[in-house]
Amino acid sequence: MRLVAHVAALLLFSLNGLAYQTDGQFQCLMQPYTLPDIPPPGVSRIGSHLFWLLKGGASARFGFVGLKADSTQMDALLTELYLESNFAPHWVREDGPDEKRVHDLLTVFKKAEEDGLPAAHYRPTEITALLSVRKPEYLARLDLLLTLSMSAYVTDMRKGRAARTRFDPILLAAVRESSGDVPQVIKQGLYAAQLQQFLEMQAPQHQAYHALKKLLAAYREIEVKGHWLPLPEGKKIEPGMADDRLDLLAQRLLVMGDLPALPPPVYADANTQQLRLYDSELVKGVKRFQARCNLEQDGIVGKTTLAALNIPVHEQIRKIILNLERWRWLPHQLNGRRILVNIAGFNLTVMNDEQTELTMPVIVGEDDHKTPVFSQDMSYIELNPYWNVPPSIARKEIVEKMKKDAGYLNRQRIRIFAGWGNRAPEVSPAAINWHTIGAGISRYRLRQEPGKGNALGTVKFVFPNRSSIYMHDTPGRNLFRQAKRSLSHGCIRVSRPFDLAWHLLQHDGSNISKERLQKEIASGKQQSFVLKKPVPVHLLYLTVMLAEDGTAHFYEDIYGNDAELAAALNLDNEGMCLLNL
Image 1 (cartoon, helix red, strand yellow):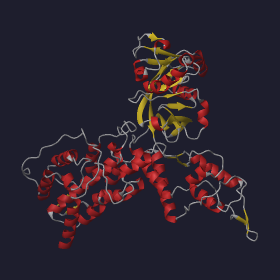
Image 2 (cartoon, helix red, strand yellow):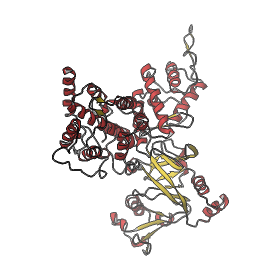
Image 3 (cartoon, one colour):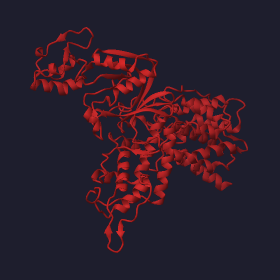
Image 4 (spheres, helix red, strand yellow):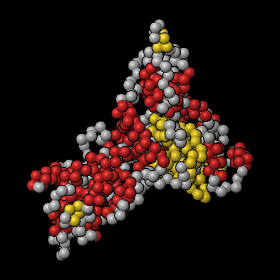
């Protein structure tokens, strides 16, 4: 017994030296509570030890501190939790821990790896080491450790693990404003009759999340079996060619599900050693792989396709884990009609509950004008919109064009107004010295008239937001043929704007017919349709997604967000524990 107590004491001492990263998720939620100078009357021996642990700052003592070593909010929550129970423990009794509840909690922690969460971060080893100790001071420490560990798990599931300050604040602007009252959920967990079931329900409940969990398990199995050998560099493989790498290629396509069955060995004739040709079945498999990776579907194994095939399986596993994290930033129940725009996948999907109603390619922001990630409700659709030229485009592009071509604005039907107010007077382009105006052009509003050549095309979809991002039509239809479509200044260009507008209006109870909608657009007259039921729009950055048929799509990390998120989660350093309290 002394040895166990000694080991437990060493573990507890080591806990005091660990620092856990958070993102201040309890900020502004918890008000500080002031403890009295001594424990209240009637408190048990365990309760008395709990009081003094809380009095000394339990979260810092146990290593659960904030990003800037500020544990105030966590301590406030702990103090409230134990004040409400008059310092009665939540997990232990005088004769030891509640074995059923602790077992349920440890079971959940063990399964956390299935969600891409590191089980070790919830301290199962330290908890287990204290289960046989019966001294009141150790039982008090065990009780607090269990409360802190459960709080960490709930927070990670409800809000995600990533520290907000590690990311571009514009790119990830409002994505974390999605879950409910995390402290309240933690309180509910302390009193949940079926703790394991309660905690498992804190994960996102939509199909996309559960499909990613299955994909994670499948890729981990592939990694264990070692069926992911790299293809050697060499000349590109085109249909009809012979190549000694075709066996490896076929094996990889089979493992990834792009080939239904393994073809005969690469040597068609063992005697003559004549190489089999790159036939139509293998070509189909390569095209399926290219489609899943958003590559040009030409069936040629060139430099780009070979590089995609040779991404190590452990990197694909990491990518899946990162995207599980991103889903945890969203509302955990996604019901009703909504629009999902995957920035990394260059596609838009309209869903109703779990059913896909419409999908189409889109164009998103280039690297210097990244499309941000956020959620907002679409409130109206505008036909034949005006385009108010952003000051940055006016300064960087239009001023330069006017220096070289004085007739540019007139041909583009762009008018100039002396200010941004609705009553600002119009100004002639000739009244401005384009060679000296420079940044001063920002004082003027440049507005392109509706009609042919308008940068927003014929339809604009508005979901008011701080970043002034919207979706719209475009006259540059040829750009949708490109595989990589990060080409805009940040807004989202949709490939089938009429279909999207008609679909949304039809399901909003509008009595406008398809023919009349076409006529209204053809008239060139600007008008707006306010949606009776605003439609949620989620701009996402997902580098792994599964189609309805279960096909896994891996997309290029066009903005470098995967690397940034992996660093914030510390995925490359398994020895560190980053908890999100």
